[in-house]
Length: 115
Image (cartoon, rainbow, N blue to C red; front, side, top):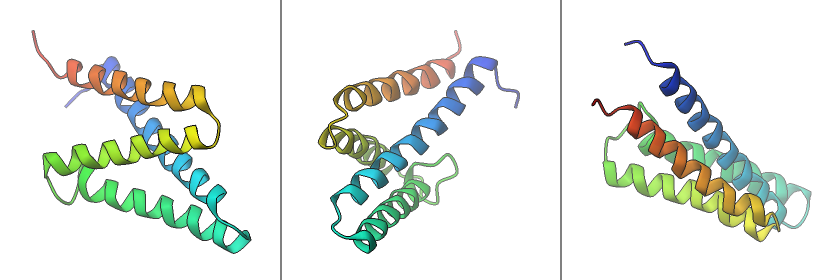
């Protein structure tokens, strides 16, 4: 299957948003810990947990094809990232990030429509 440039750009952007969400969750978790070891464990553990759940339910080649679980996973990961950014004082990023994610998802789904 040959992807159009529009689809390729939007799928790449979606992957970048996924990485940003995991990084934001890890950063937020690390900042909530007390002590160096707790910060590292929380940051790494949160990132690993988010990536594991994403791989199970929300990834393009997810282990389980359950649409409701995919949506719930995306809401939890992207929403958690936005909440974490907000709690850390990055208010503009916390508002802009989910708006950009939704716009990207809409562009991907619109790109799959044939007229």
